[in-house]
Structure formats: C-alpha cells, structure tokens
Length: 529
Image (cartoon, rainbow, N blue to C red; front, side, top):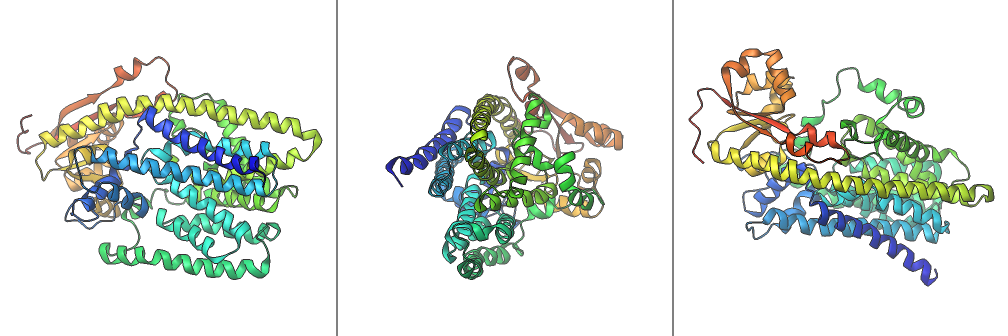
C-alpha cells in the first residue's frame, strides 16, 4: 500500500472517533439504560456484588462488558462517579468505533476498492446518528460493532482460528445474542465466502471450527460465573422481554419478512432512521431513504458484480432482518447490523464505479447519502442536547431524587422507565416488563398482563406513570387509582419543550414530558424535604 493508502483508513478512523467524542461533549447524552446497568456496576465497585438491588442475585443487565468495564472505571467511588465512569467508557467506545472503521477501511483499500466507495461507505457509518450516539451514551454498541467487523474480516479475509475466536468471543462477551451476528456472517460466508481473499476451502472450514471452539473457551468463564452466581447464564432481562410478541404474531412476521422487505414494512427498513423516529418530528422522506438504503444493502448479494466479501456482508444483513423482526424494535440493536449494510454499500459503490456509465451517478448518490447522514447527525445532536437537559437531567433525575427524599427506604416503586429514576432514587424497583424485578415477571407469567393487573397483584407503595398509562389503569380498574392510590405529585416539562421552536424529533421528548407519581393509601406519611 502507498503512504496515501495507509493514511486514508487512519483519517477515516479519526473522523469516526472525533464524531463520537464531539457528540458526547456537545450533548452530554446519557442513555436511560446506562443507569440500569451502572447501578449494578456501582454495587460491584462498592463491594455489594454485581446486583441491581443489594441482597438480590438477579442478572439485571445484558452486556457483561458493558457492565464490568464501568464497574472498573467506578473503582474508588466519589461524588461524580457515574459521570467519571461514563467518560472513561466513552473514550474506550470512541476508540472501538474508530478501530472498527480503521479495520474495515484498511481491508477495503487492500481489496482494491475505489477510494470513493471506501470513503462514502465509512462516512455513512461514521456520521450515522445511532452509530455515534450509542457509541457514547453508555451503551455497548461500539464494542459490538468492533467485534462484528473483526468477525467479518476474519471470516472473509483471515481464515485463521485466533481472529475468528476473537470475533466470536468478543461478540458473546458484549451481548449474549452475539452468536446471532456471528451465525449470520458464517452462514453468509458458507454461500459467498469462497471467492473472498480468505476463502480457500482447505483453510476456511478447519479454521472456522477451531476458531469457534477457542471462542467458546474464551466465553466459558462468564457462563460458569453467571451460572454459579445467578443460577443461570441467561440474563433476567432476556426472560423479562421474551414474551413481547402477542400469540400467533411471530411466525407470520418471520415467514412474510422477505415479501415485506420488498412490498411492505419490516424492522430492517428503520435501521437507518433516527432513534424512535416513529414518535414524529422528522421529515417523511427519511423513511423512504432509510428503506432504499436498507433494501439495497440487504439484496446486494444477488448481484454477481459485487465481490464476495461484500456479498457476505449483504447476505448477513439480510439474514439479520429475520432477527430484527423478532426482537423488540429498540434503536440500540441496530448499529451492529448497520455496519454490515455500510460494508455492503462499499462494494455496491465500487461495482458501480467500475462501470463507466454508472461512475458519475454512483458518486452523486454516495455524496447525497453522506450529506444526509451529516445533516441527520446535526439534527439528532440538537435533539439529544435538549433531551438530556429537559428530560434526563431536568425531569427524570429530579423525579428520582424527589422519591429518595419522600419514600421510605423499603418502599417499592412501579414504573417503566427504570434507568434514571431507579438510579437516583436508590429504591426497590418493580419495573415493567421486569428487567430488575422477578416479582413483575412472576406476576406476568401468572396472568397479570396489564399495568392495572400487575399493580393490583403487587401493591407497590409508589407508582410512576405516564398519563396514558394512568388512563389505561383508570379505564380498566377505576377504584385502583381513585381509592387505593392518591396523586402525590405531577412532573411536567411540556412548557419547556414547547419553548424550543426548532426541535427535530420533538415527539420523542414529548413522550416523556409528563409523569404522575401516585402513593398508595394508608402508606406512612411523607418524609419531610
């Protein structure tokens, strides 16, 4: 490689890491789920065990690395331990994001792809709002993206046991469903990997078998520790979420996924949209752009002109659509699939660049997609700055602190948004669907499906409800809120949101603008502030 070719991946990696850290510095955005996992991280660092509620051995987090690393960074405690730990985790995640871009770009350059194809695909990735936000807001997404890229590189280019083992084990240590990403890549490689640089069959299959075996050995310590400590290696969060599909809905959704990919709507169509775009406040054209980008990446494997490594990434993205259709449609699941789509687009752009009549349209399309990603990133940065200031710091944090003052130490709180309120109150949480609460999971399994039914079964001392949730309870069981509970306080920031004239994705903030805090009748008197 020439000096310029060697510098190009480093430049792209620097852009990706800088975008992450710049977004963090400007928005200060901290995702709700960070405080769910960090409560366990802080308990571990404080000597109370890797638990959400001291004394309860419940596996209330999904990512081992996403919980253990902040626990390491929280060592020593201190007044601002949560912020300090998060910033160390942000630095590590930004390095992981940059490292993933570097490895992908270096591989693409060595494969001889056109510079415009490499630059456009990596820029689409580096400036994607969810890629950037979930790399710095306390989630494990950047680590997952890094290990997805390592697994793709190892399966298509390296064909050696240890790189494959690193990809496999890294995915599993990052998320228990990491095997799904690896399986999608391995299955895609079985069909299209023979023509890739590392596709020599005499080396590929033995290396895959040995690599998976080594990866399992590297992951086994966590399986053993979790089994001994919690009684099961399966996170309680998985058990709480597993029943999110209504009966009879899942099979048709999976069977019809290929048809809906082309002619209907699937979760895969949304992976390039801003987080929770369905709440409103974004131009409708974004939905169609996201659909075109996703479908193009998901079907690139059908084109013989796309090189083998690109077809592997495309086919893995297509297969991932089945999984994305199954799991809850939450935006932090998307970045690791998006990276496969971006890799597929690199090879699509390159295939177009090799044809003289398509070279100029390909460059125009690439430039437009990168420009759109930059514009979206700026819009999301503005949105998330407001989200952090008004909703997280000025609303949910204050609600949690208010509960800490007014509730008794042994009081239980029923709510859905577990993160900020649970962390800053320090109280026992009965969350829905039961991420940190075996009691809620048990009640749901016993037939308590609605909020009213769960509250009636568990009788918590406090309820934190959005107005629509309170309305559902009131409609289903009127005496519950009128006789058994009384409204203790309303937290409302709608006026603050309305005061911001330009606010992309306004609906996302409005969703959490009002919380109603109810206190159970006959509970002890409120403590004094």
